[in-house]
Length: 88
Image 1 (cartoon, rainbow, N blue to C red):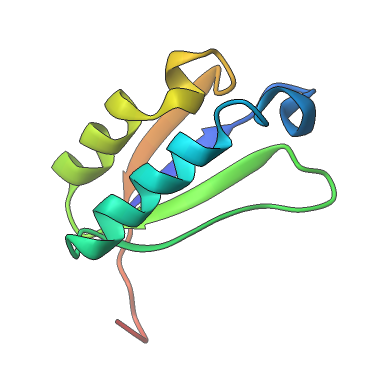
Image 2 (cartoon, rainbow, N blue to C red; image 1 turned 180 degrees about the horizontal axis):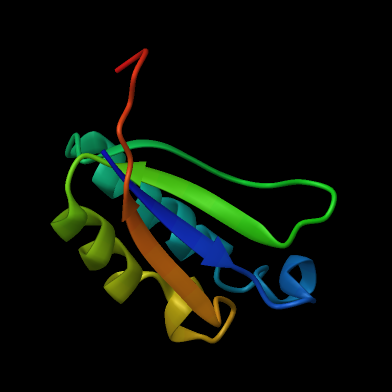
């Protein structure tokens, strides 16, 4: 598995409104293709997110197409291989 970590801008809750529908559509596309396993933002504070993919290539392709990244809502992202011990 490969974890895509996003760091959000401080005012993400306000700035994401215009881009959220396309962001969610992209998440659904990768999930339907079987390359995205789970995704979500960390809460309180809403400052980052984690999206888990089956391949590094899928994680990189997602970030390259994500409107959050393209529109400056994610100033930093990184991909790390994740060794799952329990679960799928």
